[in-house]
Length: 326
Ligand code: FES
Image (cartoon, rainbow, N blue to C red):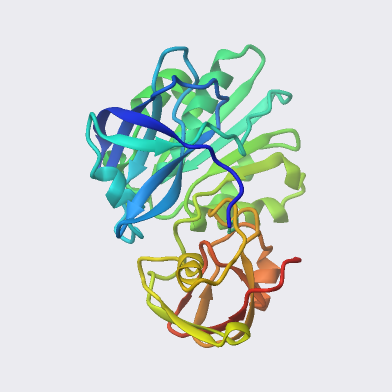
């Protein structure tokens, strides 16, 4: 059961590989582009095993009248099928997209900014860097982390925009980044904007929570795609409906429940809104919490999980879908 999104037809105007495993798409909606602010994303209707699903992709750069939308999609080894579908598109392909929506709005009220991007999390941050670098009186620094230069798109654009204010970190050469270092780049007034994989997001959030700085000065956007375990098949039992179903490695728990005619409310499908939460009654193995709705303490309790992104690894689970409060 989903509430929003009006879909419109669009055409892929160009598809170009801009880094190893990263494809950039220029998308032209049939009825013209809508004005958007940096940090906005598009929902794209994708087909996975011939079943329509929704994937969200951040818009790269700033709005320009008459210019197509730009997104960039990383081909993921552990993809549930969204990136594979996107990579099958070519110039001239038709797709269905939503209008731009922004849950990661850049505020212009501060003077000090630190932008942190990990991997394909760079996409919403490019436009932020461009906008802040252009504004007088804004001190902006950026930290861009990835496995290697070849896998990190938009480096040249960012170097042009930010010059020496851009720090690049390649984990293949330099190992994992110690997020404690971000405290040397920030002060109590710095606003931090973060987008990246779950490991980086969790590490930065933990560093920030342990710092003396306001938690509201850290803002982030998630992709809800990666977890701590590779996706595995698991069995879910729902005593309320006397059902037992198998969740395949390439589908979500939410999808498997819907396919079994069990209604679960949802909205974002990115682990942010919490609408799809279910009660965990019993489990074996590990709960791979991939959401950003529950706190770390709540995740540790393993009493609830977000069905749109979270999974079970090395075991099975018994749930109830009726509970709606946090
Ligand atoms: S639908 Fe929003 S967290 Fe699952």
